Image (cartoon, rainbow, N blue to C red):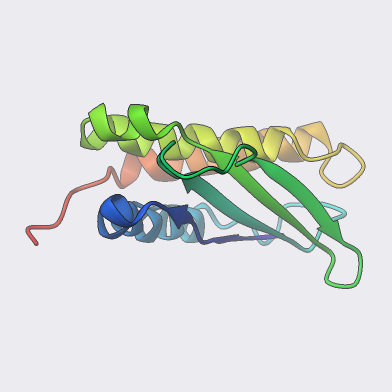
Length: 136
């Protein structure tokens, strides 16, 4: 099982949000999820943080590709929450968004015990590597 992380962000927060995406990729890599038994090859996870100035009403979505054995998940993080949050709160928003994505996956694709194992490993990896903002 592999989790691939990308993201969809408003322009004004894009650089900052991408630094959190890099951090989350490291966390997932350190969580070593490859040996967790699932009926799903990959999850492609897109946290979505888009200002309400854009007329996009549905920012969260989920689709499955049988051909690629992959679930594609967009999970919205409220723009106003992101911009008012401090560094650690932003990391928490991103981790919670991933948690929602994993929990929302059908049990036929990832059994509950495997979901719990994924979330536990990611949580422990995040404790060992807290987000540290760059000096850019």
